[in-house]
Length: 428
Ligand code: PHE
Image (cartoon, rainbow, N blue to C red):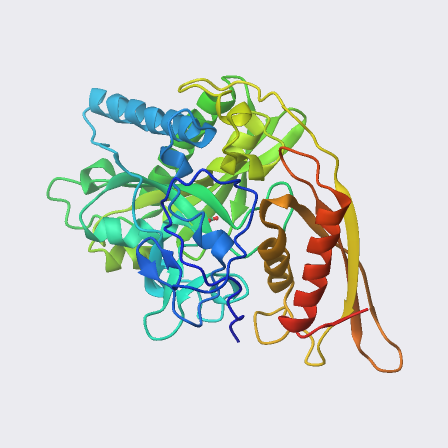
């Protein structure tokens, strides 16, 4: 079941309107929304607030923290390329950073071997631009470009761009954020036992896989040292992605905490085969630019990246990673709302019924970036009726001014109305 679309006003995705970024659109229906040049179908679950962000390409905006981090990473791979050339190897990384954020479910899931019943495909987790026959989604990760780029003949590349996911609301989650993907496929001669006339060469031999793994780890450890300092402490963990095997995660100890910085692994055999690369082997990684920028610049709230406030933007300069100076912390306003879930209940598996992500989206549709966090504070089942009740606390806070009581009350009332009308719940 797709949610009814909330705001139906057309807004060009890449316009440079000088409007208050925190204000959501509440104008009535006119034309359909367009995302990256693709019109949303009537049963799309992409809300205006997200359509408005996709394609803004903060990672391409000069002096923006996301662009600064992206550039440092690209510079690292230029060095990897030079080091490889010095020992007679090839690693010419191509950089892609303006690929279309609207992709097919084939590119986003099937080609990456994501199981058919995986929750990431569900309408409660993913934004469908055209759910029907065309199966177009907002990419949920930059891995959506792996197959296409390898099939086009690219062997070593970075691909960055915005990705969108229906998710919880707090200071580190935003429905649209930015990722960077890296892929490196070796020439067979670079792998142990490869090259020459060796007919028995096996790119999947333990030695060849180990070679990929070690090269991957060395390259990414170098990247983390570049970002977090030469002496930073790191640790590798095992992870699980359908498109890499084996899969790993890398954590770094920074300012007293272990922070997961990336996921990676040896590219799955089936993907290499599908890309005409069965004769060799390679690795891939993916990382979130906001996550890195938040810790490195000490930016406390993910909404700030979208700010058009000069007090934010003017703090940053190309090539410099320095501490963000908070220019304001306006007071928060907490409001609770509780309601009975619709009788069909659940929906937690992405099926029909109530799903938390639907609630978060309704709240964002009302308050846009004035919603700082939404947290579940209570849940119980009525012993007689077996109906389920939930209560959530909404933190309302504007990034650049104080919200008035009247403003917050108005938004809170609208949220209550929508919980009833759009989600079929009974507000208590
Ligand atoms: N796409 C994965 C994510 O979004 C990251 C990843 C990329 C993992 C490439 C392995 C290889 O979390």
